[in-house]
Length: 333
Ligand code: NAD
Ligand code: UFG
Image (tube, rainbow, N blue to C red):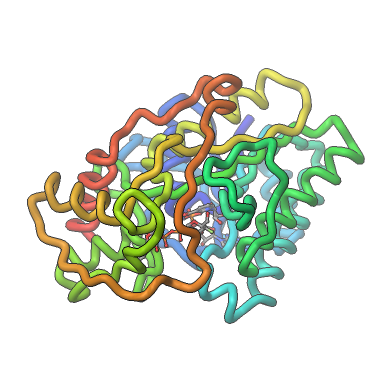
């Protein structure tokens, strides 16, 4: 009896694997290492004392994936594997649609053939699109997405809904993440993107370590508390624990399709992040204000009530924890 984690050597996947192992769960990882390193398997061992079973494969390889199910008794799947860089998805739409959609379709088919019908899917707040509301609640319609990456998330949610309509013996949990940042307190695993980062926290980490000269703050003339963009940042370890709650729900219940926001419910500005990072780590993050970034929304955050009520999950870590742990990881890498 094991939980299959696709994309389990990635940023959120690795933290989730640690939480699962620490709760005594058996885990099998599949990952093609397109955006992660095999070293993560060793880091997971250093943190948990367990060597996790790992398959280096692309989830679009149906035969190889089927073999994983034949060799292990997989009871649930947590599906992280996918490409996630928004600007890259605009440049390479076919690659993104192929990887994210084909990967998911092959996975679902192999699951059905092996009579494993419980899945947790990594979705994103991006599926709410630009509909004018600031506090996103699960009862809102999915909005219009603005890039191929976001569209793959919206389409996969649709696919899962159609699958459930066709066969209500599936148990499906869709988790819509807000902005995951931070790292494991060991400093061994964290977010370390290749090349120049697009996202705020990895960029701050590179500036703090002197690898990049200064941060560009994309606009200070939004109608927000201090003019800079506001998001709902969530510590990756809190996020990982949300997956454990989703798995516990699937273990208890026979079937159903449920969608949950995983966020703190609070909005935080770019300047608040910079100030907190500087003060908890006693390090300067030089920055300049530049033009708004195309496609950015001024402000949004989660309504986090549903996950609290139904999964008994809420965020525990503070912005200080996120900034301290992110820097602790970055210093070591
Ligand atoms: P990540 O890139 O660190 O992890 C994804 C992992 O999937 C990587 O290890 C990569 O090698 C693997 N992978 C990709 N395509 C694969 C394939 N075809 N076969 C096998 N493995 C494959 O990303 P992450 O930040 O850990 O995100 C995990 C999931 O959460 C993704 O689906 C992402 O879209 C989603 N998500 C992330 C964020 C975020 O801000 N990090 C926000 C919302 C949703
Ligand atoms: N920002 C800067 N400078 C930077 C990077 C970001 O000022 O160098 C600002 C942005 O303008 C925004 C905030 O910091 O106000 C957060 O930006 P991120 O790029 O870190 O995150 P986004 O909210 O833009 O994007 C995230 C995920 C996407 C997902 C999207 C919507 O990275 O995968 O949320 O949910 F699609």
